[in-house]
Amino acid sequence: MDMGKNHTDDNTPATAAEGAALELLSQLADGQCDADLAGRAVSHCLADGELRRTWVEWHLIGDVMREGAPAASGWQRSGTAAAVMARLASEPVPQAAVRLVTRDQPDLPQAPARPIDVTTGRSAANDAVFRWRLVAGVTSLLAVGSLAFALWGQGSRAPGAELAQGAPAPALPYAVVVAPAPAGASVAAGTPAAPAGSEIVVASAQGQVIRDARLEELLAAHRQMGAPNAWQVPSGFLRNATFDTTLTSGERR
Amino acid sequence: MSQGGRLRRLHGSALALLLATAAAQAQTSGAAPAVAAGVADRSAAASPAGTPAAQRSLSDWLARMHEAARGRAFIGTFVVSAGNAMSSARIWHICDGTQQMERVEPLTGPPRSVFRRNDQVVTFLPEQKVARTERREGMAGFPAVLQSADHSLPDFYAVKLEGSERVAGYDADVILLSPKDKLRFPYRIWVEKRTGLVVKLHTLDTDGRVLEQAAFSELQLDAPVRMERLAQMMNATEGWRVERTEAVRTTAEAEGWALRAAVPGFQPVSCYKRPAARSAEARSGAVQWVFSDGLASVSLFIEPFDRQRHGSDSLMSAGATHTLSRRLDQWWLTAVGEVPPATLQQFASGLERRR
Image (cartoon, rainbow over all chains, first blue to last red):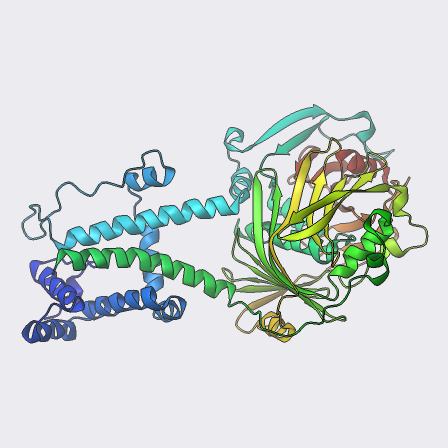
């Protein structure tokens, strides 16, 4: 039989037969099948491409756990990682996972109170669906964790993007103060006054304020072509290269 | 299937995802290129190094810092912080006496790898599969502005040895460079005692508060870094879209700009006509006129005023970097520099159109 066409994209079996085949495969992976059961499991695999993919994936997971990066490289080449990451990206974020990340509630996310029996709709504590839903929860939790880490790591890049898109000022982590232009700050003689008679002073708590893409380009140009100083080599260069998140963020807008 | 087996698989899935993420990151950054190479251990800056720290002049200190990186190899983790923002990067540096090479793998922010060979810089942006190449002038030698006969840095900064501290496991002299006017920031610098390498740098405001810090959190001096391996990685642009960032050299005079009065200590060092901006709304390039006092630099960007893009005058700060934007008749000035706002205002007030 070809069960592949009936599988959902998160390995959730759509029928009891598919669930049984997956269960059998799991037993085979655990080394719990006798010769007869092993033969049946292999037969299922031969008939179902989705089951074969699942089998390979389980083994690759084992390889990753045992061997780390080399195995992961192969995993990535196989396209499985991309599929997993695409799945992660589309996964809704469970509220429980958010609570865990924010540590507002240190308890683990609650599993569904009554796992659902795929054949009857009744609860079944040992059903495969329950397992994959829990996996989905775990992966979502990882996604949230990764997102939180990325936001933490990228520091102030996000506020800049928000500002560039006209986000409301109160959401930004820095203060905007309107101050009168100093007397000595007028433009060169013979030129008209600036359109506005005040200057906007932006004090950044984040250390990086992004006004617009054009200004970012000028800041990058200053870092690139600005005069080297006595400690430019290497410290000045390292400082710029380390801090230069705008190099790529400008293009993303 | 047993419950144990199921639980093991669940645990395995979560762990494998974590491992795969780590592996993907490792792939992005590439494998560490450090291979034993036997880099010669030179003495940095022979004459300044021989002078007792307490007796070193400002010039001695600057020469010592500059020379420190020229004959050494090191690997370290570099951390830059300003306000609440923080970025870090893994650094590989090597110099064989004639060529300097560096590899910078930022650990924060968008994935990217930066390679430098003297003044040539290649930035790999894996998300866009773009390799951006550019030339950063003056990276190979001692800053020209400090070598000019009419420039005297000691007229604008005083140096004071404040003591010793350990940074990243190394003993360092702590020196304070204090400006003699309000047109520049003070710097506190940690200089590794044996080599003269700058291992930590604070840019302070005029009240002594730290505006920005750059420091090695971990450092391995005289590390086994292989230059040919770095060169191989830097040249591996096949399969990447190579973008060249080019700026055309010009002069302020040729572009019709002048300063009515010089800003004390700052000398013009270069002027470029930048190509049209990448941003869609910027249709014309800008002139970039660069000034330096030897430690701090200021860029004046001048472009035609565009009512649609250019708003009201503004003054902004981000760490030690300040930005002043101002309309000058039919032109729009953006002054950027690691200097106090008053310095930018002085530049803006003195800039005038000559034609």
